[in-house]
Amino acid sequence: MSCPGYRPKQSDLVLTGAAETHFSRTGLDVRSVAQVLQAPVMVARDWRRTVVDPRAFCCLRRMLTRGLRANQTLVSFRTLGFPDLARYTAAYRALVAVEAAGQRLLVAADIVLVGRGRTELTLSLTAPAAARAAIAAAEVRLARVLLARVRA
Image (tube, rainbow, N blue to C red; front, side, top):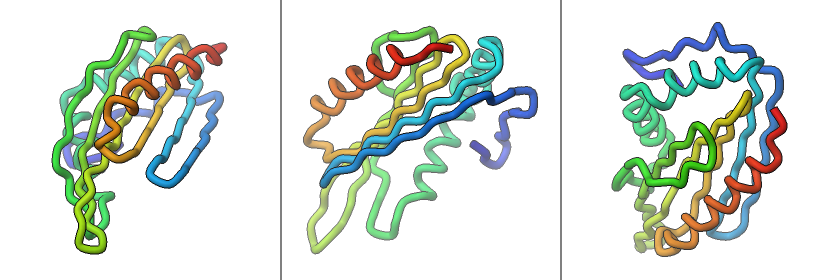
């Protein structure tokens, strides 16, 4: 992440592995990214700089807004409550209004961040906002599955 007045230091972090996957169906988009750093202390540093730092929230919101298309409008962006499945856990929800064919659809775009040991996981899920309860339950299940695979 990089925004005016906020460029978290990354030069002292050593990435030793990464993986990404994407699943998409009509009305549903799920992405996960796993990053393995050289040492747990690096995950702690990265977390302080890119999640806990108050400027990170504003930067994430700004990046999300800049990535919207002309027919999309950010309605809200907030932190979500999320179970403490790992040492580091944070979640955010953006509600985005999408105008198409004269209709307005509200879409929930969630980001779940989890860190344990040397591993950082990012789970992104986008779906119609009407399915918010199902989205929240699916995110917890998916985060548990991903954490069960963490070996570092």
